[in-house]
Length: 194
Image 1 (cartoon, rainbow, N blue to C red):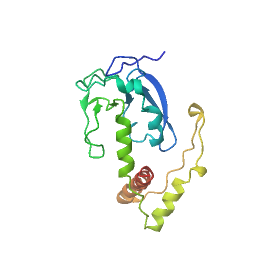
Image 2: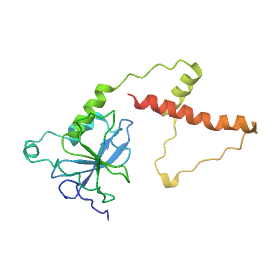
Image 3: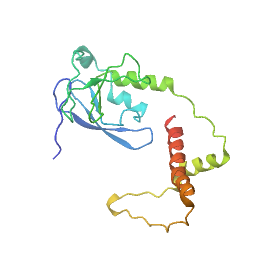
Image 4: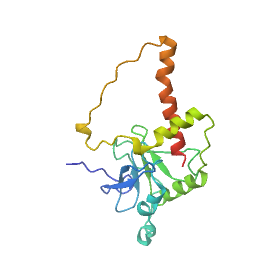
């Protein structure tokens, strides 16, 4: 049995909704059926696909006629502590976003999701061409999801441990350990700029 969490604005139980992320996976969000606000757990707001905004933040005459709480930020539905205003240079200054200092979840009242995602689309920069041919080869290899193994049952997933490579010395091993993370981080930054 899943515990219900209250809406920070009106106290109504939030309903679970699924939304598509830019990378294709699904996000499990919480939305108030009464006031239309949406709760985003940590890291869920920014990867949300812009096409989902029309479904999650629709223009509804009845909802628009009702008042939206502006004087109080409410409490975090997860931690039950007071929410604080959230400001970020990538978010419009007039966007009213409340954030929990503990779990880092974010509450967007009705209409705010459209504002945030419209600004993100306007500020999107085209991905830059990678000049280094070796890095370009690595990025294309990791970006080809068709070549990745698909795991359909995480409980049954197994993996094989490869034997350790010959020692490279302290400096060589430090470089060998950090290089995959640098490449993976660069590839993720390129993919998320779409």
